[in-house]
Length: 412
Ligand code: AMP
Ligand code: MG
Image (cartoon, rainbow, N blue to C red; front, side, top):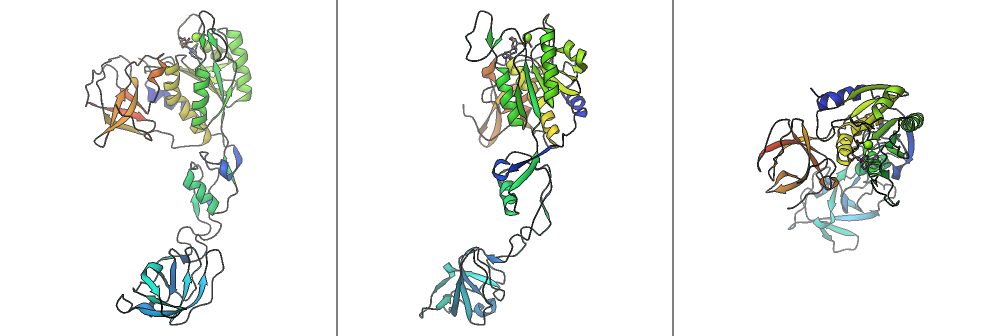
C-alpha cells in the first residue's frame, strides 16, 4: 500500500527544524517576511489624548443644555493644530478650536464636531448645537497600545497593517527570519534552457523556473543550479555542491522507475532515502531524504506533478524552516460546478479554478488533468481532493479541496 499524503508530510516535517537565522530589513522591505522577535510598544499609542474630529474641545458640563433651538455660546480661546504641543487648560465658558489628531487640553473632556456648531455672532464665539457625553470624539492616550505591550508576536507574517504597526512603535529596521536557501536541481538529458534552440528529442526546462517562483512565494531564496544530465556522477557532484551551499535541496525528475532515473541511488550514496512513493496522483514517485546533512525532496519531473508535490511537501518544509507554524492551507468542503469523471486507485489532487454562483464558492476542474499538461495548472486556486476509488462525481456533488487562494474568482 502506498503511503498516505498526511503520513508523508508528517515524516518529512519531523526531520525539519526552524533555521532560527535572522536578518535585518529596512522597514519598507520587511513585508511578507516573518517577524524575528516580539515587537513591543515603545510608548503608549496614542502617545497623548487627542481628538478624532475637527471641532471644539469643551467641558461637557458647559454644553449639557445645548440644542439647535437653544445653543450654548462658548468663547474660543485658541486654535490647536495637529503636530503641535497641547495648550493651557480651559475655564468654564471657554473652548479651543481643535483639528483631528491635535492634543486635547487636560481640562476639556470632549470634542464637539464642527458639524454640530455654528459661528457665533461675535468673531471669537461659537454656538454649540448639541450636548456631548464625556469622552466624545476623544482618542485616549494608550487606548490602542500600552508601553511595553507585545503588539506583534514573533513569527507573525508582516502584512501591510503589521508594517504600519511596526512603524508606529518606532521600528526603522526589522529583524526577520532569513529565507532558507533552496537549491533547484533539475535533471534530464532532454532539458534545454529557454532561449536555446531545441534539437530533436529535447524539450525546454520549465520546472527550474516554475520552482523558482514557487520557492520565492513560499518565502525561500531560490538558488538555480545547472540542470544535470541523467548521469549518476554528474547528479552526485551537483547534489554535493548544493548541499554545501543551501539549506534545502529540491530536485525534479529522475526519481521514478526508469532505467535512467538516478536521483534515488544518488541520495542513498550521499545520505539516506527516508521515503519514496506517496499515494497521490499526480506525484506518486516523490522522494525524501538527506544528503550530507541537508534535507532533499525529489520531485517528479512532470511539470504538474512537480508543482502539486511542491505545494504538498516543499512549501510546508520552507515555512517550517522559516519558523512558521501556521503554514497549513484551509481544506474546505465545496460543490462541483462541473462533473468530474476520473476514478483512480490513488488519491487525486485535481487542479481547479474557484468560481462563485449565488454566493457559493464552487470548484471548477480543468478538463485535461494530465500530469504533463501545464495548461491544467493555469489559473489554479484550489486542489480538489478525490479519494481513491471514488467517483464519478456530478455537478453539485461536494468534495474537499485545498484552497490556495480566493483573491480572484473565475467566471464560466
Ligand atoms: P522524469 O521524472 O525524469 O521521468 O520526467 C518525467 C517527465 O517530465 C518527462 O517527460 C520529462 O521530460 C519531464 N521533465 C522532467 N524534468 C523537466 C523539467 N525540468 N522541465 C520540463 N519537463 C521536465
Ligand atoms: Mg528524467
